[in-house]
Image 1 (cartoon, rainbow, N blue to C red):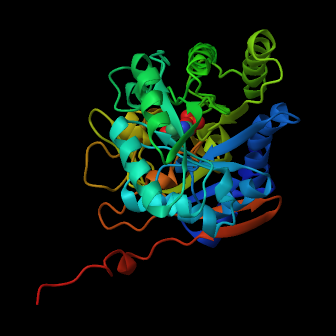
Image 2: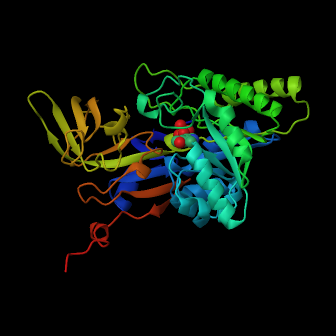
Image 3: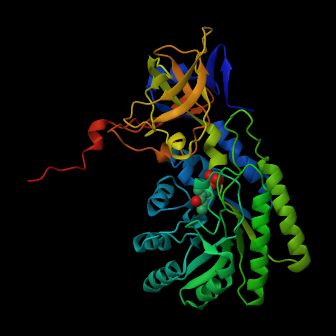
Length: 425
Ligand SMILES: *Cc1c(COP(=O)(O)O)cnc(C)c1O
């Protein structure tokens, strides 16, 4: 069930009318539904019930503290990609022992921070990173739990910017080098290889590439076993894609069906080769937890008819929501209070001084100046990717809980944006 629907001619988030939210908090504002968030988390957690499994929410998709807190209370772990994200987990009351640390460029400081909080695992992406982590752990007198991010070289069939498991990507260790790299890790005194992971890409609508990647990880776990390197967990990376609502778009596979198929393979493998062996399964979903839980609420500033195109200039821009500019992503735009008048075709654009500043192109809309629009499915890689370009404060964020609205991030004040800057003496 969608948590965003029309009631009495007004788009609502659960029981809350979005025009009311705009009145109270202004625009642009991100509006999230708490119940949608919990439903999405449960879509992963429920099929994992009773199993040795952990859902580590990939918090780069949306790292608002209130979102992290709600998920932590459901038992979520977190997939982090920076020291800053670990500090957010701690600030939200999350458990650092359920944190895995991904990313190709971990600094010494970030490693120290993560080791001091005894995170679950470092997802290591290169041999130099193994050496650095070994040195840092040695200095601190601890052992670092590591997993290698292996590149299964499976084509995820997604946008090239969000395909990450191919040989040409900067991420991970090549499948053919994995065994040698594990040997290196196992020989380093302050590292303990505990797991294996991959992340082949984002917005995957089909689970076949993920299951293909799983088979490759399983193959490596068996090879490593024969070498005397026994891993305790298998991390399959990010989640399933979501429906953005574009005409002709294929439906994403249901999360529950994907997880059922994944466990079916894992169970068959364990029954055949490793009866009784414990192996924890870790998921790192981001988009599918938060993507459809949020919309970006924006107001029409001007309608600007042109010779070739009509522009609908709104108060949200590429700095608020970068996906269209960055990935040519198609995002649905809905009027908050639909009008009966004639619809025209518009490009929905922001005020930023870039031709690439658009949110949607060639959309049929019946709108007038001052109307409210909602950019749908904006909960993932929306606010977290926003910037202050053009000295624009970041949008406010609110969470709807039934008929209540909570401000969870204030709109940034432009004066705050330059308070860290100083003039020359
Ligand atoms: C971004 C990312 C994810 C989350 O991917 P989604 O497609 O949003 O589920 C998971 N793991 C890693 C390592 C990532 O970089």
